[in-house]
Image 1 (cartoon, rainbow, N blue to C red):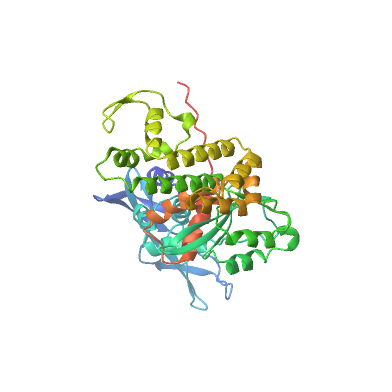
Image 2 (cartoon, rainbow, N blue to C red):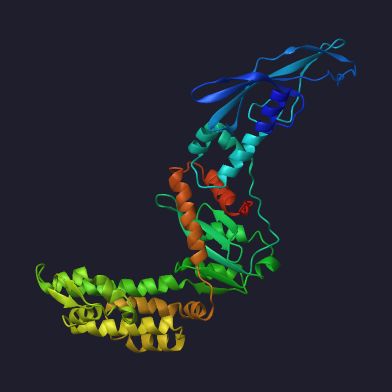
Amino acid sequence: MEQNDYIKESLDIKDPNITFETEFIKCFTHREYQAKLDYDAPNCPACQEKRENYDFQKPYKIPYLEMGGFKVLIRLKKRRFRCKTCGKIQVAKTSLVRENHQIPNIINHKITEKLMGRKAMTKIAEDLSVSLSTVYRQLERFESKTDWTYLPEVMSWDEYAFKKGKMSFIAQDYQSKKIVTILDRRTQTVIRNHFMCYPHKVRSRVKVITMDMFSPHYSLAKKLFPNTKIVLDRFYIIQNLSRAMNRFRIRIMNPFERKSIEYRALKHYWKLIQQDRRILSDKRFYRPTFRMHVTKQEIVQRLLSFSDDLRSHYELYQLLLFHFQEKKGEYFFELISDTIKHVHPIFKTVFSTFLKDKEKIVNALKLSFSNAKLETTNNLIKVIKRNAFGFRKFENFKKRIFLALNIKKERTSFVLSRC
């Protein structure tokens, strides 16, 4: 009896009607325990007559959690009861597993816990010694219900790739980082049909929406949320400026001969032109391209000496970068308006986009919101998709994301023991 209690305590089995044999089968890969489920015969639910003990079923193969580094398999025999009057037979029930199931409840809870992480579903099935179908069935039990009576005051919008060439839409609460919705497409019709399910009063609560420079979302957001301000992510504004500077550098570089020092220097030190000149290092290092010890600031001056056009556009780029980082929106757009007629078409296209989205860029400079938190979420989504080697069904992918991000995991604070 003591041995039986020890095994039950080790496996954390609470059912008092389950008894274990004193010995277990130790294999190379796992351990097997022989157990019986038996208790006094209850009354028949059909005729309320006393039933009798009949016999035991064939042993159920119940996979269990690892113990001592070994996987555990419980072979459980269940008692059958037979009614003397009506002849109906019933199988004994236990809290260890659900009726007509072989997967214990604790394994199902463990599957749900692992689904909240980033592991692939095949890896979860392998670790818990269950089939892949069992993991999928547990995932399908989860339902992501939408609360149509609430929307956050600050939302973030973005897109992510579900399949190659197919972009999906995601909206996140800026403060709590909870997912508001995930849609399989990013078209205006799909987004509008979803958010129109919210009452007008709920949609009016949204004050700020942060997003990237995907222009079709601008007018749609204004129609759906009448009181909202659109804030463009500052990263994409700087990115457009730096890309324009890089394309202009390539245009200046290409006419030079491939083996010339001008071509090699412009090609090798392209990052220095795009960096903020205020953070360029003044330490000297030997540079094989110039065959001498120079600082990064001196390298930039040498690169600018190759072309007057490159120097003038570089000075403009650095001045715009300074005004933007100092959040001086008036000087930023005044400089763009004064120089848009004289700059190269590469910069003219970017400047025209900035002037068209002036209100949204000003909001980005005045307000402290950005898409940084949602970009972190998108990175986690990419990790989940990569570990799973992709998903066939969008619903399964959506459930994994909701499990990983919207369900709070219980955190344990570690306490140092006092010796």
